Length: 467
Ligand code: ADP
Image 1 (cartoon, rainbow, N blue to C red):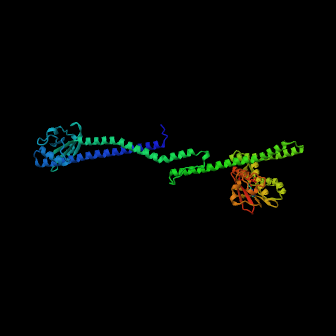
Image 2: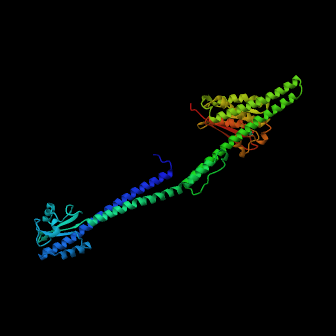
Image 3: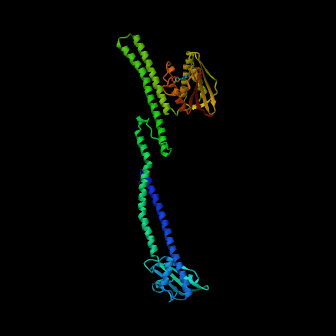
């Protein structure tokens, strides 16, 4: 059976461990009790036997029952009803002067006589005399180093057995009660300890995609649960940021598409309002085609961005010389640079091999070069340089444009970001996002170094393939 609640599992473990511990402790207690009770009986028997041996040995006279009572009382604290005492000769025969009566029922084992003949005492437990076992001590009486008699004293172990049984009964009664109480306590404690988890589950259930700004309560206690809440909150913050980015992206994209569509619609409506000359229709159609081309460009950019970000374009990798690619891009951009009176130069480069998609990397470099030319303005200078930085190939695209303030260094890579003064340029703000996602898709990076008035340098870093 699988128990799905941590609370039930904790309680079950707790109760099981407690039961085992209590049983071990109870068992050990029982052992100690049994041992000390038997030990007490043996010691008392030893005391009685020694006094009786002394008495009988010295006086050579009969020992009367009151004397026996007295000695038993001295060592046992009371005179047990089922007590035994008798004297035997060294061969185990009854000494008529001492004992008799019920004590005659005591057996004399050959081992006890054998031990006695060597001057040693023998303790035995005998079952056959009474309903309860009887503990017997057989002790030799020595005179001048010779065994002259043998003393036997004994007592019923009834009270020892009864005490042990009482202990077992008490344990059997108390153990389930104790375990039950502890189980109930454990259940309540587990509930208390897990309450914050339940609260967290509830709160987490409440937070859906529309309520991502909500956070779980942090107690500040820095315990396991507080750390869990902090971790979940961190995750929520990242999700929140990602969701807002996606919705901002969607809103911006729709807005970008809306503008040319509105223009197109307006132009078509105006053209249809009255009869026009063929030239006027042609003009309207050409302008409409412009807007359509603009939309195609935008949609293509969006598609490219989505596919590079999703990693769909990963995989088409060929060995290519980055120097060659820089030269190709440079010569393609020459026409644009000339038309804007910008001086474009390419520093001579050694071949640097990278693994990548020539079309995408060409697009990346073109975007950077196009921006550099666009933002440099008439009379500006744009330089493409390639260098080797340890195990990376770096392409720097430097311009003498207006520069970018530090606080915008991350912003410019966001889709649809355009600095307010760039609005005059015909850009949609996707160039750098596409460039960066291509660099990332090639396990590389795209960084910017720039400050207002001092131009900008964009650097693409790509892992190099060692020849
Ligand atoms: P856009 O289509 O507007 O050029 P980009 O993503 O290429 O979009 O660039 C985003 C913004 O970054 C631009 O609007 C501009 O403000 C800034 N930017 C990019 N390149 C340069 C540069 N070489 N010099 C100055 N500003 C730049």
